Amino acid sequence: KKMKISINNMNPEIVVSAAVFPQLATAVSKYAQNWYEWLSKGYIDKIYLMAYTTSNDDLEKLLNQISNLRLNDKIVVGLKAWDSSKKYKVDDINFKIKLSKKLKFAGISLFSYSGIRNNDYFKNIKF
Image (cartoon, rainbow, N blue to C red; front, side):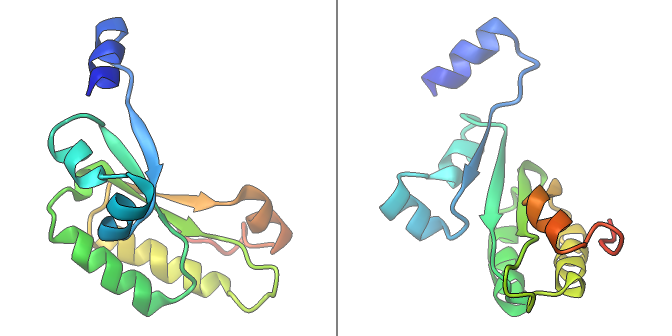
């Protein structure tokens, strides 16, 4: 809260954000990241949800739960976009992008650049 006030006093145009653990209960209890409170009380402007699962079903369940919090316009979904084993296909990333857009989250963030490049995903990712 104090950080947000200080930053706004310096420049109210600065967006305060944080990359956070996606499961809220674990984020709060294990990582001291009560991102729901931060967002709902205006202590932070946006979060980048580190939703790095390769499972489409797990991500869909997680994002549907988070959608119930009604803060989608303040949440950027961070998606895993790498795989050293080559089992995680670009079609899975595209499904996750489409799902995030369908649920009207603030945006998506792909992690990591080198993972996308090394797996030659750039030409097939669909935004």
